Length: 211
Image (cartoon, rainbow, N blue to C red; front, side, top):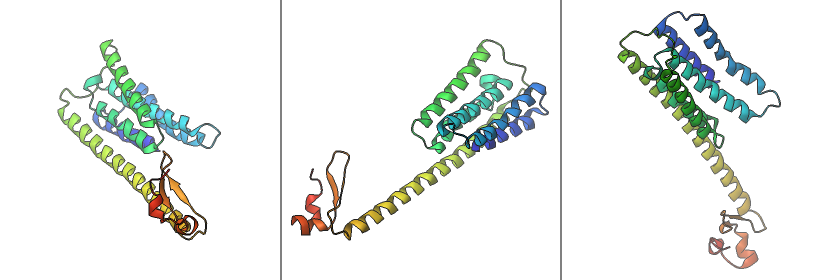
C-alpha cells in the first residue's frame, strides 16, 4: 500500500529528526500497520471504496499526529497534507479526490484546534526549524512528483486502452454487412460503417452529425 510506504517515510523522518520515540509515539507509529489490515480486509465482502476511504483518513491522521507532536502549525511535517489529495487521485474513483481533500482539511483543522487550545505536547525538535522545513518540503515535492507521474501513467494507459478498443470497434464495423453506428451523448451519429452506402444509399460521412 502506498499509504503504508508514505507512513514509513514520515515515521523514519520523525525518528531521524527527533530521536528515539517515547511509548506514546511508538504506539502511534504502530498504527502504520493499519493499511496492511485494510489490505487483508480487501479479501472480504467489505466495499473496496470504504477501505480506500479509510486508508486516506488514516494517512491524513498520521500526518496530523506527527504535526501535533512537532510544533503543530509550525511543524515541518504539515506540508505532507498536500499529498493526501494526490493519493486520492491515484485511487481513481469518482469523488475520491474531494474526499481526500476534505480529510486533509479536517486534519489541518484538528492540528490548529489543538494548538489553539494549548494542548500540544512538548516538541523535541531543535529551536531552528528552517533546515528541517526545507528538507520536509523538498521531500514532499519529490513524493508529489512521483505520485503525479504514476497518475499520468495510469491516465495514458487508460487512453491507450480506449484507443485500442475504438480501433477494434472500427475494424469490426467496417467489415460488417449490417449498418453499425456510434453516437454522441445527445444522440447524434459520430461514426457510421461503410454498409450505410449499400443499405441507405448514403456515404457514411453524410450521416455524421445526424440524429
